[in-house]
Structures are given as structure tokens and as C-alpha cells.
Length: 139
Image 1 (cartoon, rainbow, N blue to C red):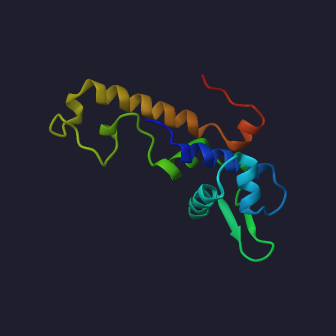
Image 2: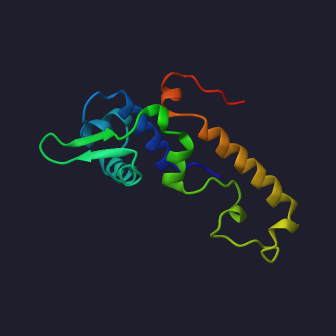
Image 3: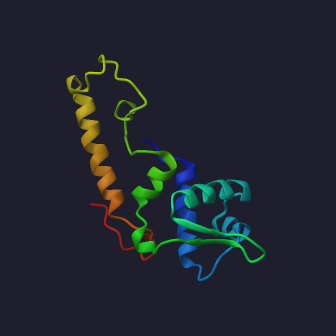
């Protein structure tokens, strides 16, 4: 599994937004995170659809976090953008297994499944607030 650039940027955008006190326009968010405005708007749209961000229309419109940074986990953001966390394609429901779909016959499937679950659990324990405060444990 590789976390996409879009997930990386979504995490940056949410981290920046956690520091803002008020509704902030997309251009400011894009500038503060070094993300192009076009890509930032695409990501913000997904974050709004995922109920992590609230959008406001009008002259003073923009974006604001819908929930506290200590409620937004890295797992939730990555899965919102990239889909389920799986380090091998056979773990993703969209791909077939070359062993006639008998995933129990493959030792690697079992190993990768356990590692994927462990990774997802670790990402679920780290919040945007933890990252801001540098208060996360990776062991």
C-alpha cells in the first residue's frame, strides 16, 4: 500500500485547518499547505463529503473543520481519500486472488492481512491533534 499524494495533502490541509480560528478561504488553505488551488478544492470537496469539513458559501465563505482535531484520525482521512487500508491488492475487494480466490491457501495473504490490520489500528490511534502536538507513539 502506498498513501497517495492526495491523502498526504488532505492530512496537511486538515492540520492547517486545525490551526485556523475562523472560516478560511480555499486560496489561503492552498497557500498555507503548498497545494495547488485546484487540487486543494478537489480535496476539500471530498473532506466536505466525508463530514470532516464544513463549507460556507458567500463573500465571507470558505471552510472550517466540522469536528475537533482530536476526533479526526489518520485512518479516517486516508480511507476517505484512498479507500480501505490494505498493503496487498488481494486484500482489496476489487482484485482477485491468483489462487482461484481461495485466500486461505496463500500464506502471504494471511501475513499481509495481519499487517494491514495492525497498520489500520495504529493509524486509528493517531489524530490530527496528536500530530500537531507531536504526541503520537508509533510502537
